[in-house]
Image 1 (cartoon, helix red, strand yellow):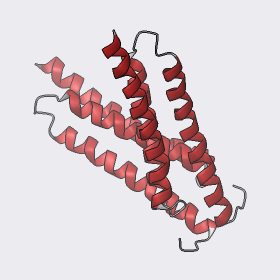
Image 2 (cartoon, rainbow over the protein chains, first blue to last red):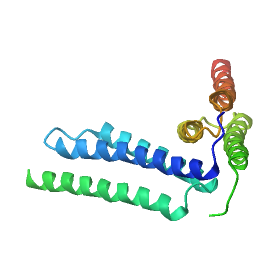
Image 3 (cartoon, rainbow over the protein chains, first blue to last red):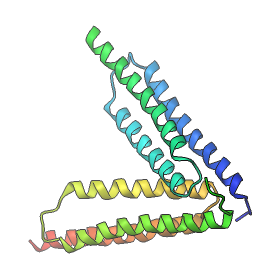
Length: 97
Length: 97
């Protein structure tokens, strides 16, 4: 294992969490673009699973004091906001039909 | 955030992962003791979810170079072995009925 400073570990932790959050964000955006396709319940399952996985990573990082609790919450909240935006779009589409 | 050395973070990472693995182990053991109770599919779901959460924590720790890949695999494999032991016990019980 290479020697890394605590500061470097903290910086890397944020980078990794943000990268994982961005992956989920891409999934949500793809789903928003494909709204005309039949709604796929599996997609919701995938998003839920990914969100849970990320929340466990964040929780772990907070317990190791690599990331501040507020920072972790902010990352998750941003995704949750985007998710509810997606749900809103679904509902509007269903109402229009 | 308090200043911690990289070595301390690595030690803490192993401790936290092992503690989480132990929690899952306890869940499995409780289930083994209550084998006479009707099999609860929800329990399997809970165990699967917990295993997935732990695997994400381990993966995160490995990516941050806090834990060696082999160590992470060993923690998961130990739980998987215990889980298949539990499944074996279920099957034997079903056959006996």
